[in-house]
Image 1 (cartoon, one colour):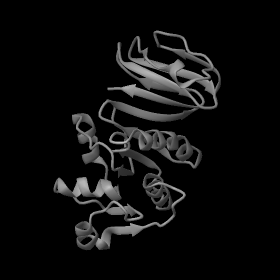
Image 2 (tube, one colour; image 1 turned 90 degrees about the vertical axis):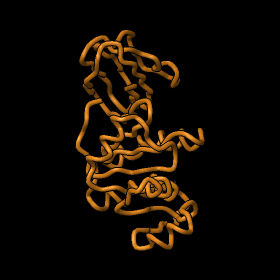
Image 3 (cartoon, rainbow, N blue to C red; image 1 turned 135 degrees about the horizontal axis):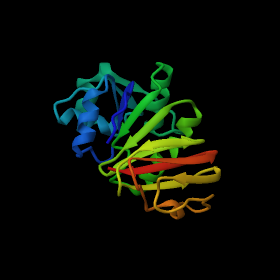
Image 4 (spheres, rainbow, N blue to C red; image 1 turned 120 degrees about the vertical axis):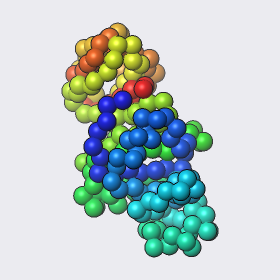
Length: 205
C-alpha cells in the first residue's frame, strides 16, 4: 500500500483497523480526531486523540468526564459524526484526511460513510477511507494509480461520462449500476481512469 502524507486522521466507530499497513499509516499522521464511539476504542488501546468530535451519544460516561477537555460537541443531527469531524478539520485548514473505522458493525452506517466521501471531495477535502481490506478513494476526472499485477480494484460511477481505463484486465464504460464496475484487476504496476465527472475507486491491499 503506497503511503501518503495526511494532515489528520479520523477514527470512526466501526471496525478498528487490524491491517499492519493501516496501523503503520496511523502512527505517521500528526493529528487524530476521534468520533464519539471511536474514541472509546482508541483510548482503550492506551492511545489519546487530539480531539473527540460528535454529539456525545456514544462516548462513555467515564471518557466524557476524564477527557472533557478534548471533547468538541456538535449537536447538529443533520450530519453524522464522521462529517462533523471532516467539517471541523477543514475549518482548521486540514484538508488531507485519512479515515479509519468507517466500515463494519453496521452495514447502513458503512454505506452512508462511504457515500459521504464524494461530498467531502466536493467540499474541497482530499479524503481516503481505509478498511481492513482496502481503501476507498473519491475521484474526479482522469486519475493514475500505482498497483501490482493481480491487485483487485472496483470502480463505482457517480456522475462520470466517457469513462475508459488503461492497465485493467476488463474494460470500463459509463456504468449505470454500482455492481458493473466491481471485481476488476490490475495488469501491471500502474493503471489509470479517464473520465469526465466523479467516481469512487476501491483498491484491495
